[in-house]
Amino acid sequence: METIKDIFQAFGPEYMTRFGDAMPGDHRKVINAIINCRTNHFKAMSLIFKAKFRDLMKKDPLYSQIPSQVWEQSFNVNCQAVGGSERSIKYLAPYVFKIAISDYRIVNVKNRRVSFKYKKSKSNRWRTLQLHVMEFMRRYLQHVLPTGFMKIRYYGFLNPNCRVSLQKISALIQIYLGFFIKAPKTEIKPMNPPTCSICGGNLIYRGSILVFRSSLPTGAG
Image (cartoon, rainbow, N blue to C red; front, side, top):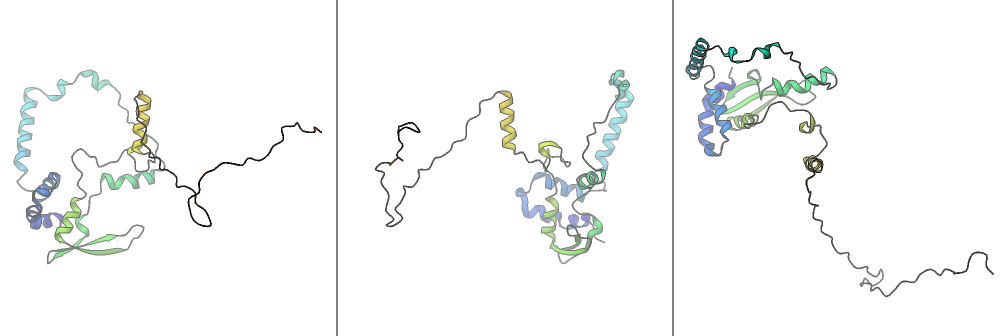
């Protein structure tokens, strides 16, 4: 059975050659990491780190550099209620553990096309989709986060359920800190002159006829 690694080992170099400098650097790093996963490529870097760590521990154990008071402090985990546990786990699990696609979902790779299984939302029936190998890798790499982005989305205004716009948040911060906020420019469009309902020509204002009101008090003869 073909795996993600098999696909990228066979077609990854071609993919990088085809897209060249147009590829994000993070995508190139991921492709190289997948190709060299569980090979001797990373074994030398790992041995270097282990040797360096043993050398540091012999000279001066790392924990000795930490003040002793630190180990005497109580550490508390910041927990906040987010509703039912089942709903929380269902929401967070895909962002913590789930990857773009697992090896067991790949059916086969034939004639430069990848066939894999998937399920539609709110359905338990497996379906099969076939993609060109280059398109398959492109879609896979869309799940690679850019440098600086985190996989887990936070609460607050970064949560997808937040209904407050970033513009409003920015304005509230500026008001709180006393910054001057420029009023948005509004363009006042002139009103079209009223037209005659009979001939369609423009009406010209000549004057107004006010309703007559007597100046005498009520009940005066």
